[in-house]
Amino acid sequence: ISRAQRSAYNRMKERGYTFPTDVKHGSFINLKQLYQLSDDDDNEESKGATEQKTEEREDAVTITKGWKWDGSTTLEIGFGDGSNLLTYSQLHPNKMCLGADIHSPGVGTLMKRMEESINNGIYWKCPNMYNGDGNNNENDASPQEEKEEKPYQNVRIYAGDGIKLLSYIPSNSIDDILLTFPDPWPNNGHYKWRVIQIATLAEMKRVLKPNTGRFYLATDAVCFHEWTHDIFTKVVKEEGGWREVTPIPDRREWLPVMSKYELKGIEEGRFTMYQCWESC
Image (cartoon, rainbow, N blue to C red; front, side, top):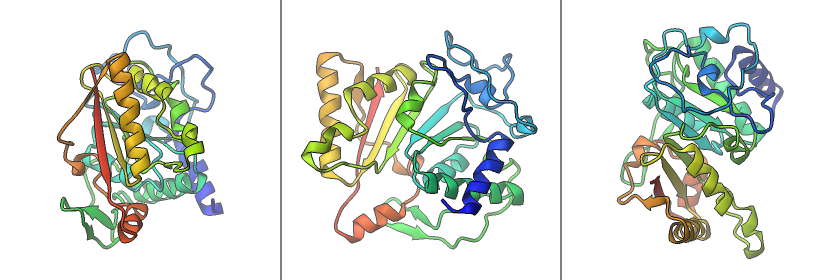
C-alpha cells in the first residue's frame, strides 16, 4: 500500500466511512448506528441484535445528512480495487453498501478514489463497464456529472476478512451478498482455504433476510464454480434452506463492471460463470 493510499484510508476512517475496530466478540454491529441513522427511522434493523456503538468520529454525522435509506443492504466480500462496489453503490444510492477486503492495496485504492470523489462532489467512473454481451464498454476516466446526492454516502468499508465480518452482522439484515472472482485455490490440497465452506453458508444464511436474501457468485475458475455448487447442493440435500435462482439475474444489476482480472482471464481463454442462491 502506498503512503498516499494509507493516508487516504486514515482520513476516511476519521470521517466515518469504515467499520468500528472495537467490536467485542459475540456482539453485533448496529448498522443504523454505522450510518448515523436515528433509532426511530421507519426502516428498523433486525430485532434481537446486540447494539454495538460505533467509534466517535468528529464529522461522521454529516456523511448521511439528508440521505434516505430504502431499507436494503448489500455486502460485497472481497471487493478487490473497489471498482464494482463503487459503481454498484452509485446505481443503488439509497441502499447500504458494505464492502470487505483483506488486501491492503485494494482497500487503499478504493479509499483514495472515494476521497477524491467526495471532495470533488462527483462519482468516480469505472473505465470498463459490462454491456450485456460479454464484452466491455471502454469509457474514459473523466468525472461524471455532478449529482444531487453526495457521492458514496451509502458506502462503508471493512478492511479485513469478509467472512469474519459476517459474525458481527445482525441476523436477517442483509439483502444481497456478492462474491466476485475469489481466489479459487485450484490445487486439490488447498480446497479447505476456499471461501465457500459449509460453515460459510451457515453464516450467510443467518445474516440474509429469509425468503428474499440472495448470494451471488462470479468466477472464471471451473474448480471453484463446481465446488460452490457442490457445497450448496450438499447443504440443500441435508438441511434445505436454499434454492438456486435460474436464470441468473441481470448481471448489470449486481456486477456492472468488468475488472482487470476478468478482462485478463478473457484474454487468456477463460470465461465468467455465475451462480445465484436464495435463502428460503
